[in-house]
Length: 301
Ligand code: SF4
Image 1: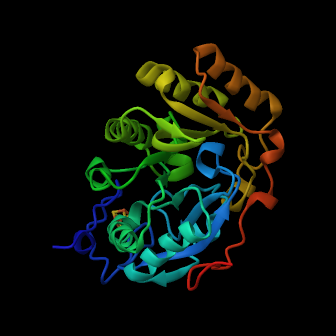
Image 2 (image 1 turned 90 degrees about the vertical axis):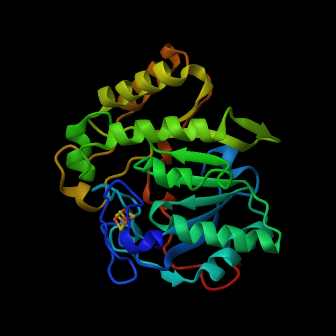
């Protein structure tokens, strides 16, 4: 039986037949892609000089209420593609000079992605494959990626179950994401950088949220206790109120400099040395891509 006939790809465990219905994530039997682009604003070890070859998938299994990509994550904006076309898209990113293949929100399309990678490899595809995820992942699904994904780029969003329930309807987020990240580290082994590009390893992202800096600090403590300085982290300041967050009492404002700096200082106090940080000016609508479907149906310009 295909994995899509009784879908348990992510912790939502819908058990639905995706050839007939769409689950919580919005995914059916064919992958849906919102944008194919070269993205220069990922961390330098992912974007390099030319940019990361981003493939933004529509839908999401987490669906945070403040999502900056809500048009595609919540409203499923995008274009359905066959596995063959997905393989061509991956290969075309290499032809455009992308440094990595950056699969954004890929969880609900793992089977289609695996087929796409095999088809792309037949054409000569050889970029490092980056799995750019919310962190809300089943170990059984991650195990399918062994030997295919080179770099895991998970978010680690919340420690508190109250926050994860309120913002992402996932009370078990931390418990699930923590196990997922430990497994990702097991899959890739120690990180390896070649010519400034991460060729294998795990880079954990955390975006500091307004009013939640203590929660951020608990996550840093967990990461430090678990991995010490062997893990690469990225502390993001780019939070901008969007979507349902515009009406939310805590989320409707930007992050303050104090909130962000105190979390970064805490990471340094703990001893992290492989830590990417952002300028406060990285927050803003100009950093949100236009979801115009570029590159989905033909070779991107
Ligand atoms: S991937 Fe989608 S359909 Fe499958 S279990 Fe998760 S939310 Fe449900």
